[in-house]
Length: 177
Image 1 (cartoon, rainbow, N blue to C red):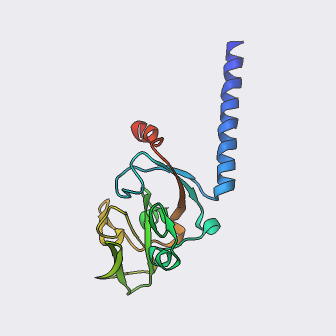
Image 2 (tube, rainbow, N blue to C red):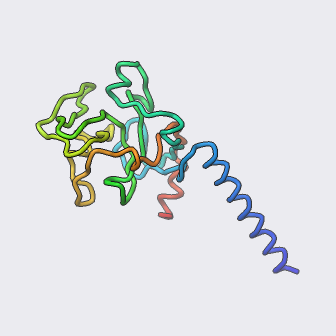
Image 3 (tube, rainbow, N blue to C red):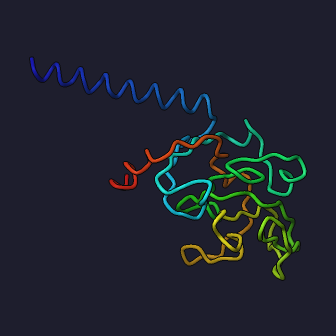
């Protein structure tokens, strides 16, 4: 009888998790729809251990810092949207603010003290330029995990951050799952 009860509890828990996942995907249009912040690169607006709820850019749109400044649109304390993307289409996702969209050959912009200044480096492909709020240079001028990061293509974007839940991501960070 105890095994039957245990199996019933396991099946019930699995069904509950499946329903939560299905509803989350249906609402947000993306997977994963929640991520934990693992570094301080987005401080002071997002902190290590925060959980961020993501939505598909197809559902909510995507506004760059440059566009946000013109429209007076802010997200997480600054102009433009924050996205989670896979650098160069693979690897560990990064969560940073979208600064601008560039075309191949354009100068890569840098967000510096509330202004956009052009760098001396040219984009080697079309895509979005991203930069952590606490970082002095955009991802596309840095070496991340031993690799130069290309301008972000739309298909590399996992989601646009829309909500932040402080601290609960520490559970994931502590157990690293």
